[in-house]
Image 1 (cartoon, helix red, strand yellow):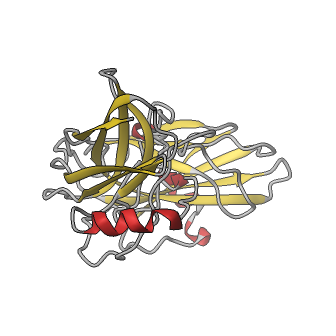
Image 2: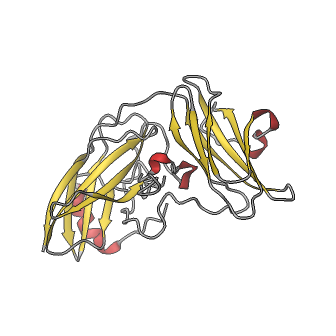
Length: 287
Protein backbone atom coordinates (compact mmCIF):
# COMPACT_ATOMS: atom_id res chain seq x y z
CA UNK A 1 0.00 0.00 0.00
CA UNK A 2 1.19 3.49 -0.63
CA UNK A 3 2.31 5.47 2.42
CA UNK A 4 -0.06 7.60 4.43
CA UNK A 5 1.10 11.22 4.48
CA UNK A 6 0.35 13.38 7.47
CA UNK A 7 -1.21 16.74 6.72
CA UNK A 8 -0.38 19.41 9.29
CA UNK A 9 -2.50 22.01 7.53
CA UNK A 10 -5.62 19.99 8.35
CA UNK A 11 -4.96 20.00 12.07
CA UNK A 12 -7.80 22.44 12.63
CA UNK A 13 -10.23 20.36 10.58
CA UNK A 14 -9.23 17.21 12.38
CA UNK A 15 -9.81 18.94 15.69
CA UNK A 16 -13.33 19.88 14.65
CA UNK A 17 -14.04 16.36 13.47
CA UNK A 18 -12.87 14.64 16.66
CA UNK A 19 -16.19 15.41 18.27
CA UNK A 20 -18.12 14.24 15.22
CA UNK A 21 -16.60 10.85 14.59
CA UNK A 22 -13.46 8.76 14.40
CA UNK A 23 -11.46 8.89 11.16
CA UNK A 24 -10.89 6.63 8.13
CA UNK A 25 -10.40 5.19 4.49
CA UNK A 26 -9.40 3.06 1.28
CA UNK A 27 -9.28 -2.09 -4.20
CA UNK A 28 -7.04 0.02 -5.31
CA UNK A 29 -7.10 -2.59 -4.27
CA UNK A 30 -8.59 -2.75 -4.07
CA UNK A 31 -5.00 -3.83 -3.76
CA UNK A 32 -5.82 -3.06 -1.82
CA UNK A 33 -4.19 -3.46 -1.71
CA UNK A 34 -10.00 -3.65 -1.95
CA UNK A 35 -8.95 -1.08 -0.36
CA UNK A 36 -7.22 -3.30 0.80
CA UNK A 37 -3.76 -2.92 -0.01
CA UNK A 38 -4.83 -5.79 -0.77
CA UNK A 39 -9.30 -3.28 -4.63
CA UNK A 40 -7.66 -6.30 -5.87
CA UNK A 41 -8.97 -4.56 -8.61
CA UNK A 42 -9.80 -1.38 -8.36
CA UNK A 43 -6.78 -3.19 -7.80
CA UNK A 44 -7.04 -6.29 -9.87
CA UNK A 45 -10.30 -7.42 -9.57
CA UNK A 46 -9.96 -6.15 -6.22
CA UNK A 47 -8.41 -7.08 -3.12
CA UNK A 48 -11.13 -9.28 -3.37
CA UNK A 49 -9.08 -11.25 -5.29
CA UNK A 50 -6.18 -10.79 -3.58
CA UNK A 51 -4.40 -9.13 -3.57
CA UNK A 52 -4.82 -8.85 0.05
CA UNK A 53 -3.64 -7.96 -1.00
CA UNK A 54 -2.27 -9.75 1.91
CA UNK A 55 0.44 -11.14 0.69
CA UNK A 56 -0.09 -8.32 1.40
CA UNK A 57 0.89 -5.48 0.03
CA UNK A 58 0.09 -5.45 2.73
CA UNK A 59 -2.83 -6.53 2.40
CA UNK A 60 -1.56 -7.41 5.31
CA UNK A 61 -1.09 -4.37 7.27
CA UNK A 62 -4.13 -5.10 9.35
CA UNK A 63 -4.85 -7.90 11.71
CA UNK A 64 -7.50 -10.32 10.57
CA UNK A 65 -9.07 -10.50 14.00
CA UNK A 66 -11.69 -8.20 15.48
CA UNK A 67 -10.33 -4.70 16.17
CA UNK A 68 -9.72 -3.50 19.68
CA UNK A 69 -10.81 -0.24 21.24
CA UNK A 70 -7.30 0.86 22.18
CA UNK A 71 -6.15 1.89 18.69
CA UNK A 72 -3.85 4.89 18.44
CA UNK A 73 -5.73 8.15 18.85
CA UNK A 74 -3.98 9.78 15.89
CA UNK A 75 -3.59 8.19 12.47
CA UNK A 76 -2.61 10.07 9.34
CA UNK A 77 -5.52 10.36 6.92
CA UNK A 78 -5.58 8.11 3.90
CA UNK A 79 -4.97 9.58 0.46
CA UNK A 80 -6.55 8.76 -2.90
CA UNK A 81 -5.00 5.81 -4.71
CA UNK A 82 -3.06 7.02 -7.72
CA UNK A 83 -0.47 5.40 -9.93
CA UNK A 84 0.17 1.72 -9.09
CA UNK A 85 -2.76 0.06 -7.41
CA UNK A 86 -2.36 -0.32 -3.66
CA UNK A 87 -2.53 -4.05 -4.15
CA UNK A 88 0.27 -4.19 -6.67
CA UNK A 89 2.76 -6.80 -5.56
CA UNK A 90 5.99 -5.33 -4.24
CA UNK A 91 9.19 -6.51 -5.87
CA UNK A 92 11.13 -9.17 -4.05
CA UNK A 93 13.86 -7.54 -2.00
CA UNK A 94 15.87 -10.65 -1.37
CA UNK A 95 13.84 -11.51 1.70
CA UNK A 96 10.15 -10.89 1.14
CA UNK A 97 8.04 -12.46 -1.61
CA UNK A 98 4.41 -11.65 -2.30
CA UNK A 99 1.57 -14.10 -1.68
CA UNK A 100 -2.12 -13.54 -1.10
CA UNK A 101 -5.22 -15.55 -0.59
CA UNK A 102 -8.06 -14.85 -3.00
CA UNK A 103 -10.82 -17.18 -1.90
CA UNK A 104 -11.31 -19.21 1.23
CA UNK A 105 -13.99 -21.79 1.98
CA UNK A 106 -14.23 -24.75 4.35
CA UNK A 107 -13.04 -27.00 1.50
CA UNK A 108 -10.51 -24.97 -0.48
CA UNK A 109 -8.13 -22.04 -0.16
CA UNK A 110 -7.02 -20.27 -3.33
CA UNK A 111 -3.69 -18.47 -3.16
CA UNK A 112 -1.92 -16.11 -5.54
CA UNK A 113 1.76 -15.27 -5.87
CA UNK A 114 3.46 -12.64 -7.97
CA UNK A 115 5.75 -13.21 -10.93
CA UNK A 116 9.20 -11.86 -10.10
CA UNK A 117 11.97 -11.22 -12.61
CA UNK A 118 14.85 -13.62 -12.29
CA UNK A 119 12.87 -16.29 -10.44
CA UNK A 120 12.96 -19.74 -12.03
CA UNK A 121 10.80 -21.68 -9.58
CA UNK A 122 8.15 -21.00 -6.94
CA UNK A 123 7.42 -23.41 -4.11
CA UNK A 124 4.05 -23.06 -2.34
CA UNK A 125 3.82 -24.30 1.25
CA UNK A 126 1.10 -24.79 3.88
CA UNK A 127 1.61 -25.15 7.62
CA UNK A 128 -0.92 -25.15 10.48
CA UNK A 129 -1.32 -21.76 12.19
CA UNK A 130 -0.90 -22.13 15.92
CA UNK A 131 -0.13 -18.47 16.61
CA UNK A 132 -0.17 -15.06 14.94
CA UNK A 133 3.62 -15.01 14.84
CA UNK A 134 4.74 -15.46 11.25
CA UNK A 135 6.77 -18.66 10.83
CA UNK A 136 10.43 -18.55 9.89
CA UNK A 137 11.53 -19.58 6.42
CA UNK A 138 12.91 -22.78 7.95
CA UNK A 139 9.30 -23.89 8.46
CA UNK A 140 9.00 -24.32 4.67
CA UNK A 141 10.06 -27.91 4.02
CA UNK A 142 9.61 -30.59 1.38
CA UNK A 143 7.02 -32.23 3.64
CA UNK A 144 4.66 -29.22 3.59
CA UNK A 145 5.29 -28.16 -0.02
CA UNK A 146 1.98 -28.40 -1.89
CA UNK A 147 2.77 -26.91 -5.30
CA UNK A 148 5.68 -25.99 -7.58
CA UNK A 149 5.47 -23.57 -10.52
CA UNK A 150 7.85 -21.79 -12.87
CA UNK A 151 5.88 -18.54 -12.97
CA UNK A 152 3.53 -16.43 -10.91
CA UNK A 153 -0.08 -17.57 -10.75
CA UNK A 154 -2.81 -19.10 -8.66
CA UNK A 155 -3.23 -22.44 -6.94
CA UNK A 156 -6.30 -23.95 -5.28
CA UNK A 157 -5.36 -25.91 -2.19
CA UNK A 158 -7.91 -28.71 -1.78
CA UNK A 159 -6.09 -30.46 1.05
CA UNK A 160 -7.36 -28.24 3.86
CA UNK A 161 -9.46 -29.32 6.84
CA UNK A 162 -12.73 -27.48 7.47
CA UNK A 163 -12.34 -24.90 10.23
CA UNK A 164 -8.53 -25.12 10.32
CA UNK A 165 -6.27 -22.05 10.24
CA UNK A 166 -3.08 -22.04 8.22
CA UNK A 167 -0.07 -20.12 7.00
CA UNK A 168 0.35 -20.37 3.24
CA UNK A 169 3.77 -19.35 1.97
CA UNK A 170 5.92 -19.07 -1.13
CA UNK A 171 9.65 -19.54 -1.67
CA UNK A 172 11.35 -18.15 -4.77
CA UNK A 173 14.42 -19.77 -6.30
CA UNK A 174 16.84 -18.56 -8.95
CA UNK A 175 17.95 -20.66 -11.93
CA UNK A 176 20.99 -21.66 -9.84
CA UNK A 177 18.73 -23.00 -7.11
CA UNK A 178 19.40 -20.17 -4.67
CA UNK A 179 16.58 -19.06 -2.38
CA UNK A 180 16.02 -15.39 -3.21
CA UNK A 181 12.82 -14.53 -1.32
CA UNK A 182 9.96 -15.91 0.70
CA UNK A 183 6.64 -14.74 2.14
CA UNK A 184 3.68 -15.92 4.22
CA UNK A 185 -0.02 -15.19 4.39
CA UNK A 186 -2.60 -16.18 7.01
CA UNK A 187 -5.51 -18.28 5.76
CA UNK A 188 -8.50 -20.12 7.21
CA UNK A 189 -10.66 -22.92 5.80
CA UNK A 190 -13.90 -21.32 6.94
CA UNK A 191 -17.16 -20.51 5.19
CA UNK A 192 -18.00 -16.91 5.99
CA UNK A 193 -20.56 -15.02 3.95
CA UNK A 194 -21.73 -12.58 6.63
CA UNK A 195 -20.57 -9.01 5.94
CA UNK A 196 -19.67 -6.46 8.59
CA UNK A 197 -22.35 -3.96 9.54
CA UNK A 198 -22.26 -0.48 8.00
CA UNK A 199 -19.74 2.05 9.22
CA UNK A 200 -21.29 4.82 11.27
CA UNK A 201 -20.73 8.48 11.95
CA UNK A 202 -19.49 9.35 8.47
CA UNK A 203 -18.82 13.07 7.94
CA UNK A 204 -17.29 15.24 5.22
CA UNK A 205 -15.75 18.69 5.76
CA UNK A 206 -14.30 20.88 3.00
CA UNK A 207 -11.47 23.32 3.67
CA UNK A 208 -8.54 24.79 1.74
CA UNK A 209 -9.40 22.90 -1.42
CA UNK A 210 -9.55 19.50 0.25
CA UNK A 211 -12.26 17.31 1.76
CA UNK A 212 -11.77 15.38 4.99
CA UNK A 213 -14.00 12.32 5.32
CA UNK A 214 -14.22 10.54 8.68
CA UNK A 215 -16.12 7.55 10.04
CA UNK A 216 -16.27 5.10 12.96
CA UNK A 217 -15.92 1.34 13.15
CA UNK A 218 -18.98 -0.79 12.45
CA UNK A 219 -20.67 -2.34 15.47
CA UNK A 220 -20.58 -5.87 14.03
CA UNK A 221 -17.02 -6.23 12.83
CA UNK A 222 -15.96 -9.86 13.31
CA UNK A 223 -12.64 -10.29 11.47
CA UNK A 224 -12.92 -6.80 10.07
CA UNK A 225 -10.03 -6.31 7.65
CA UNK A 226 -10.24 -2.79 6.25
CA UNK A 227 -12.20 -0.09 4.44
CA UNK A 228 -12.78 1.12 0.91
CA UNK A 229 -13.65 4.71 0.02
CA UNK A 230 -15.83 5.58 -2.98
CA UNK A 231 -16.68 8.92 -4.58
CA UNK A 232 -19.61 9.85 -6.80
CA UNK A 233 -19.95 13.20 -8.58
CA UNK A 234 -23.25 14.84 -9.62
CA UNK A 235 -25.30 11.66 -9.47
CA UNK A 236 -22.77 9.37 -11.18
CA UNK A 237 -22.23 5.92 -9.60
CA UNK A 238 -19.56 6.12 -6.88
CA UNK A 239 -16.14 4.80 -7.89
CA UNK A 240 -13.48 3.34 -5.62
CA UNK A 241 -10.66 5.80 -4.97
CA UNK A 242 -8.84 4.42 -1.92
CA UNK A 243 -8.49 1.33 0.28
CA UNK A 244 -6.82 0.57 3.58
CA UNK A 245 -6.24 -2.60 5.57
CA UNK A 246 -5.57 -0.72 8.79
CA UNK A 247 -8.39 -1.03 11.29
CA UNK A 248 -7.40 2.21 13.01
CA UNK A 249 -7.45 4.08 9.69
CA UNK A 250 -10.74 5.92 9.77
CA UNK A 251 -10.10 9.12 7.87
CA UNK A 252 -9.61 10.03 4.23
CA UNK A 253 -8.43 13.25 2.60
CA UNK A 254 -9.56 13.92 -0.95
CA UNK A 255 -6.85 16.36 -2.02
CA UNK A 256 -8.17 16.71 -5.58
CA UNK A 257 -11.94 17.00 -5.15
CA UNK A 258 -14.14 18.14 -8.04
CA UNK A 259 -15.28 21.76 -8.07
CA UNK A 260 -18.81 23.12 -8.45
CA UNK A 261 -20.32 19.70 -7.87
CA UNK A 262 -22.43 17.67 -5.51
CA UNK A 263 -20.19 14.89 -4.24
CA UNK A 264 -21.12 11.67 -2.43
CA UNK A 265 -18.47 9.88 -0.39
CA UNK A 266 -19.18 6.29 0.60
CA UNK A 267 -17.23 4.00 2.93
CA UNK A 268 -17.50 0.21 2.81
CA UNK A 269 -16.03 -2.11 5.44
CA UNK A 270 -14.74 -5.52 4.38
CA UNK A 271 -13.70 -8.57 6.39
CA UNK A 272 -11.06 -11.28 6.16
CA UNK A 273 -13.18 -13.25 3.67
CA UNK A 274 -13.85 -10.23 1.43
CA UNK A 275 -17.45 -9.73 2.51
CA UNK A 276 -18.44 -6.09 1.97
CA UNK A 277 -20.76 -4.12 4.21
CA UNK A 278 -23.52 -2.00 2.78
CA UNK A 279 -22.12 1.45 1.92
CA UNK A 280 -22.45 4.33 4.33
CA UNK A 281 -22.44 7.71 2.62
CA UNK A 282 -22.39 11.46 3.09
CA UNK A 283 -23.17 14.20 0.55
CA UNK A 284 -21.38 17.54 0.30
CA UNK A 285 -21.87 20.46 -2.10
CA UNK A 286 -18.53 21.82 -3.28
CA UNK A 287 -18.34 25.38 -4.62
